Image (cartoon, each protein chain N blue to C red):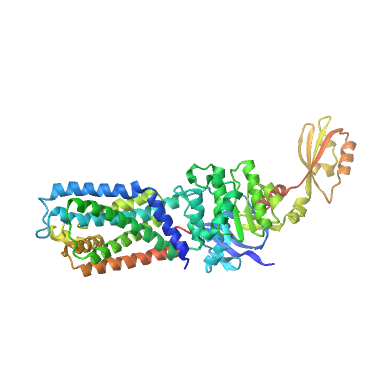
Length: 253
Length: 309
């Protein structure tokens, strides 16, 4: 394994988002806190969640996870599409890095950005609203798996898209709806039966639900079930991504 | 002699276009090799295949004995590519770009001395900490050369490195590349400036429509039938009347324009003395006469024309 090559690509990806910290970390933290402010004030008297749990408290883990996964996706997808369109992806493709090292470097960098932004939102939020932690291992596990899944999806989107327009379509028509319909702002038990059923086909729902279990010890579905769904989705998507990279799909024509 | 790049029966299709039609080519270790051809001949496709950026439909390519697909790690360690397009990563400084490129090849701090040497040799030392965006086109081109050399590859491929580069930079780049060649590196060059290929390359392949139509030493190409022609320009006192000339001379006329005539002769079959005598016999008084031997460009143009016809 070309370990130094892998570390270098990882370092380069981290340096890339560090150099535009205002755009990649600070801005998403502020946006999420605005969501928290607006939704908690607008919905706190209208949405019924778990017993004895204030709506704002309920909302925070969902928003943290939403930030984690959105930023993980944004990091890998934007880095790849920018490199492809500007042509500088060639500097990585000419090197002795394997497709596995390529995947792991983009994956880890995206996970780190997702977790940094998520941690930022959490730390600022708990300054105003106390949020209990039921099981730190579970919440970290879901944060890690969720960010890995979306980082991988970002790699797929970045490889597949040939222009920014296509990537924006991927984000607006796949990532956004799946995120907003995943139970970030509500418990699925408050939904009509049909929406509850449909929600169970959304892998994002299991990430949010499992992550929330880590905070409150309560969830809409069994967290083991959620863990399984997210893990299987990650293995499937990871396998697909590795296959695309090893064949050079849209990278080596 | 050992082989630096071994290309065997390479085919490549892009849709219905058969871009490379079974190319066979061996580039020897230590050679300064020129790969020439008109636009769309398949040069860049062939280079991209050597670099592993394009996959072959048939055949194989090895760099320093390592197959570029099966043993891509070893092959890429031996290979430095200067791409044709002026690409760069706008996030980083010149030094960061070189450190990152060096790291991809498994090299760490121990390579800093070489990075400094490259910066110095390519006159980039004072721009080492400048962001790539702030550099001029020529400087970006030099950074591309430094990136290709940062892991000290044995084989360096330059894909039209002087396209759009000013004369001064072009000269300094060629001096730098010639030095690399003297140090034992194998250099493969594609260029549109045929006089550069003529001045620098030991051996030349001419590619057209995905096929190698000529492969020889530079001298071999110039001594070939095509290289034996030379041009004679004649300026006469009076207007030249073609009908007055001998049949032999008429067959060799390339153009006539009033007092000026251009002839294309073959150095084995035609004598300049005979030409002068024939002109005198036709009553043509010569003011000026100049000769120009065939250069690589003439050979190149003739070869391409012959293949097209």
